[in-house]
Image 1 (cartoon, rainbow, N blue to C red):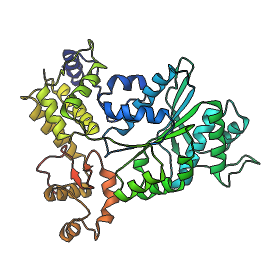
Image 2 (cartoon, rainbow, N blue to C red; image 1 turned 60 degrees about the horizontal axis):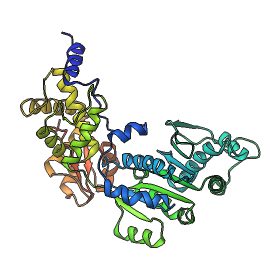
Image 3 (cartoon, rainbow, N blue to C red; image 1 turned 135 degrees about the horizontal axis):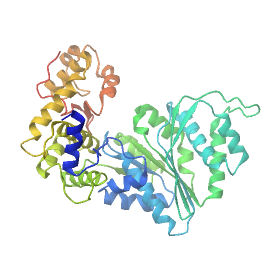
Image 4 (cartoon, rainbow, N blue to C red; image 1 turned 45 degrees about the vertical axis):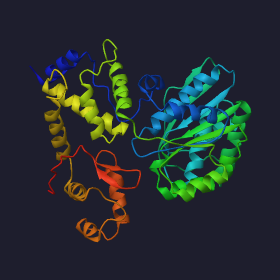
Length: 409
């Protein structure tokens, strides 16, 4: 039997059309709603806060599920508010190029121009004037003609504003003008800005500092939903005193039980007959994967996907306590083969030291060829996620996807 033949036959034996696990949440919000599980208390806190036009900061470590949470939150808000006959405009900005306040305002400006171009000639002129960006739109969802939910991501670089008579010396007042126009058209305008945690800490703080008036001046007509990493206690206190956020919601790692429910939901999206079963996994194996993933949802999905693919290639009847150890070793060995010599040496040192942090010994830094931990940060950012996990306390630990006995070369 051919490799693909065995692969497909195994999937059919498992009762699946394909392998459903992905590290990024589905673009389609309806599919996301089928997969999403847990975070009940956080949702119950966030829904009325955002509905009232107050700002929310959602925090958490890499891969904990911030994007999935805010997209599902917007989906729930869209559906629940539609029954109240309140016209809302909900905008989701997935990412934007550049750092700092100016890039932030330009992203908001183009997002608003995209929405208001059909209603305002000046919004259309703004849209035509901002060149150089690629706009990715997910399907716009609309509930009974009452609530719009538009998902947008921006890629590329900012081009020159070339339209004669429409040069932007300062994008802030133009952005604010379109925002106020949207607030006139809709009862409330709610804007989610995701991936701010992927900006540098300095850029994130600069955005908050510069946008204080924007974030505080909604008067219930607009609300912002932002994502971020853990800030210092001083910054948290300062921001709350300024009244920037009605709520600060921290997403924690998920329990084994919750991750198992997530796995079942993923599997049911491709299962021929949806059920509450873990097939092809056993509950004990999923519990082991949750531990290997440090209970981080994105890492959990990645491990499930790789183990399932290896199991389908091997033609195993079930990923149980007997088959999983060998599949896991194969996944780890395959992962290690993808490493470059420099990254392999970094991970080897990190394994031996039990992780890397700002208080790393001089001997450790010398072994890595740097004088200060700050010099390591750009490299650590490159390998964050699949290879290194940044903990809540700032310590970086190697992923369990790496073999326990990783060699330096």
